[in-house]
Length: 96
Image (cartoon, rainbow, N blue to C red; front, side, top):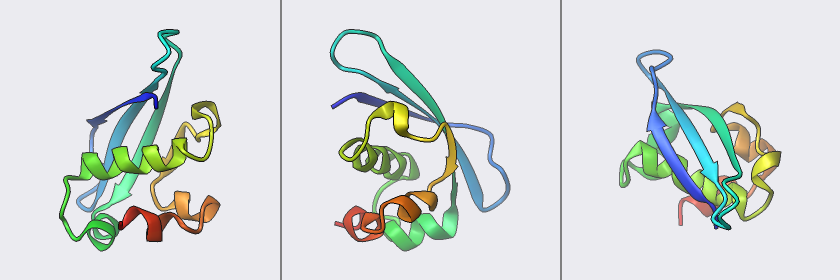
């Protein structure tokens, strides 16, 4: 599994956060991708109940994506809710 680094960026607004996510291959090749992800606070709370910090939720969301597609197939800029558009099982799986 590639290494996933999540850093908080400038918020979009009071209730929308922005994160920079870097995915680096663990095979020693140094191959990496960068992604900008936004997430609404209410969506985060609905999915996690606040049991984990937002950065961990973003990381787990990328783990979910990487189990289903190559890092190069992940959109470079998206809102976290869009994952469910491509993978309808996302919200059910992420709550486990």
